[in-house]
Image (cartoon, rainbow, N blue to C red; front, side, top):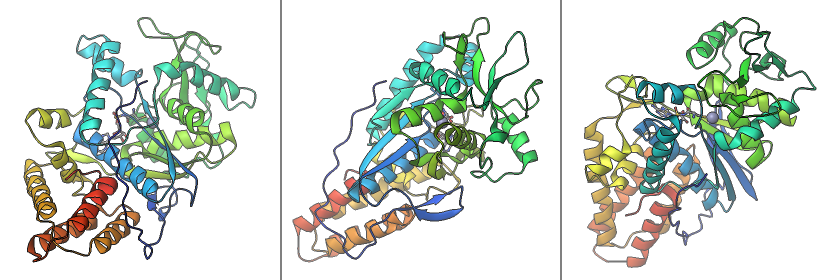
Amino acid sequence: MRSWDAPEVPEVAHRSAGVEATLRLHDTASGEVRPAGPTEGTARMYVCGITPYDATHLGHAFTYLTFDLVNRQWRDLGLDVRFAQNVTDVDEPLLERAEQTGRDWEELAAEQIALFRDDMEALRILPPQDYVGAVESVQTVADLVDSMRPSGHVYQIDDPDHPDWYFSCAQAPGFGRVSHLDRDTMRRVFGENGGDPDRPGKRDPLDCLVWRFERPGEPSWDSRLGRGRPGWHIECTAIALDRLGPRIDVQGGGTDLTFPHHEMCAAEGVVASHQPFADSYVHVGMVGLDGEKMSKSRGNLEFVSRLRAQGVDPMAVRVALLGHHYRENWEWTPAQLDAAVRRLAGWREGLAAAGAVDAGRVVDRLREALRADLDVVAAAGVLDDWAGASRAATRSDPDAARLVADAVDALLGVRL
Ligand code: 5CA
Ligand code: ZN
């Protein structure tokens, strides 16, 4: 499916020779902050995309901003970046929402996908080269499931009406290595997040659905598995393997996806490709509003599009989101947006003043902060200091101001 338009990314005309040329990120599976991506060549990242309803709330925006920073870091390190993202444009939650609101599910999805694109463009998020819907991946998923039949890693459930296909997760090498949850917790969380631990006829309560047979009134497609539609986890596994190949550098999403989603992707991926699915699993903290996780089901949402319609500068939204480290769980408040508007104005005044400062040192410090597990809080502090120094300087140096503005644009995605 069509992605969105790419913002320009300026070249930063300063080499930070003294700063270690490695991006380090927190990997949930190992529990460590460690190098992410290769030292040269191509870095490959798969980020779990939206289920298209209630887009784009600020929790979504925080997640996609985080992986945009990863993308920008890798590019700044001279790597090529291959980036893929899905759209879960057919799945239970979407169909349920369409049903509840009396809408056609395809229309709802198309409208929300269009809104999401506009929001991503406004926020200057670099687009994935592969932006892929579940609907357009139906055959890719069916082929992947089919390929796991001979080894017995997938099986049909003993249910004559709906002999759905399941993936046998217990047989997958290293199952549990992403989330490290005990089985009781897995069972509970699975049940709360789209899983069906109590369905009779499964070999293991944790086995996950990979192909659901047609039910009356539900969308379905012909395939060699029978007429039906893909399960959720296998959607991302299949798209990632198809578009990026095995052993990607990073699979990303919010912490709500650690289990079951990324655990299942890892399990399916290792069985299908005989290699680890991803080298790092990177998870973004949850953004809440009024004390609760911002989510569709709770209805406590603030939307990027609503703020834009109010005339808020999208760069101020971006600066507000940059006020939090990605691993933090935090609450959105309108006061943070006000503070971000002031902060952005301060940076812009710093640029306009164009005072003589050691711009190379500013760029070094930005890179140092961001390469260290995306320390955006430190990076924003560096810019506050720079803007103050630029305004206070008695001599002007437009080249220095330009260098910092380019770095802010390239590394943080904020256009001053
Ligand atoms: N389509 C699936 C992923 S394959 C899905 O989770 N869709 S979603 O629309 O619910 O979420 C889209 C992305 O935003 C996911 O990466 C999810 O982890 C992240 N996300 C959802 N809610 C929040 C939140 N409140 N704070 C931060 N990130 C969130
Ligand atoms: Zn996913």
